[in-house]
Length: 256
Ligand code: NAD
Ligand code: 0WE
Image 1 (cartoon, helix red, strand yellow):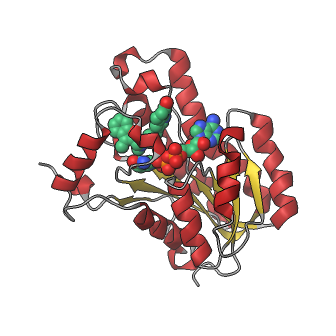
Image 2: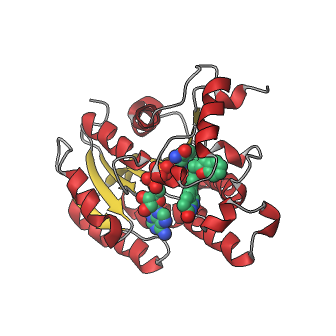
């Protein structure tokens, strides 16, 4: 029981394929008490349904659309009232307007660029800040990133720029929160067939290529990403902060 006695808030679960849900199940199995976030009414019922599957009832299931600052601020009270202090924050959400993932990066409109970085990057900073008063000593903040931040991957486009900024934000947040004992890290996951991924044209070809090229000769499973999140949230990772851990069956190390 690596997370016994720890209370961890996870944003956001959409459905059973969400990486956030895989993380919730893995953390629940290690004894954590969870707060689960959902974006809006479209996903509320699904998330409340999934919550029933956990061994421990979540302390709270809360709305969190990061486009609305007041919803982020409200979390301080709602989460504070339901669990008091927290030992972990998992940020597993991203959004770019669909057209950005189909047209060349060169054509990214100002508004779409700003939306993508607001939702996918700034939300980590905003969430880390509202939870700062609630963080226990030795709390762990975890976010999800992708190789498209380091290398050009066709169609990932402005999301790659947002993930590069997200990884830099991890380092600056690790610096700011380190004195309070709070660690901040990212997991760079290989491609996983979630709702956020399957809408992308050519995604299945990407999965195929990834499997062929990766040292482990297969694609990564959400459960493996979740296990790395359990490790980062646990005391086993007490010396790790500001880091980006690749959980991608080794794909990122291969040149050709
Ligand atoms: P998903 O669709 O299950 O999760 C995306 C989540 O983002 C959803 O819960 C959605 O509600 C939330 N979201 C979108 N806009 C939001 C907003 N305005 N406010 C609040 N929440 C919002 O897909 P996923 O693949 O589990 O994605 C989770 C994270 O993992 C993302 O950061 C994604 O970039 C990252 N990631 C995914 C893959 C992959 O291949 N699936 C690989 C590496 C990293
Ligand atoms: O981070 C992601 C995807 C995030 C995402 C997905 C969507 C689809 C629906 C962000 N915004 C939107 N907007 C929508 O309207 N991944 C790591 C998965 C992903 O996305 C890709 C990939 C991979 C892998 C896009 C192009 C190429 C590869």
